Length: 159
Image 1: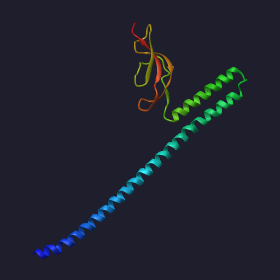
Image 2: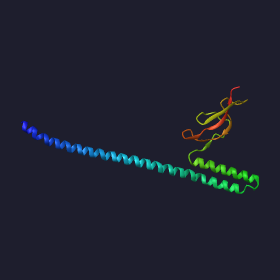
Image 3: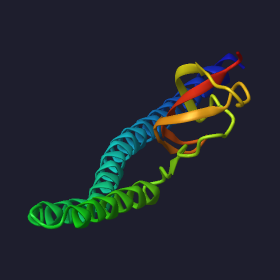
Image 4: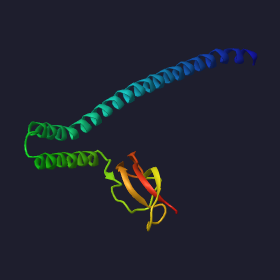
């Protein structure tokens, strides 16, 4: 009986060694796959950032082209220059909207919303409900979920 156990041990040991070698090989393969995934993720992230930067820059090209045209016509009628600048501003607003940051907060008289507004001043206002936007200092861009900047506003306070 002891002789059979001694004979069985070397066989079991070789099977275990084979199994350990197989598992170590699987582990090395998994680690190499993980390393490759990390490298690919970094490379893909850099590529996506570059594509988004290009998309943003392309949105601004039309605005820049039209600013160049406006500068070229600087000696024209002042009304024409103002109309040109207003058109360029509208194009810039459209570009921001196309990038996912629409302009908002141009309306006075709406209630102050801390999610969308930044109060830069509080003033007494007769005939206006407290907490109402009485002046827009700077418009906001974006929306409640994806805000680039809040609208800077002046808010009415209670008398």
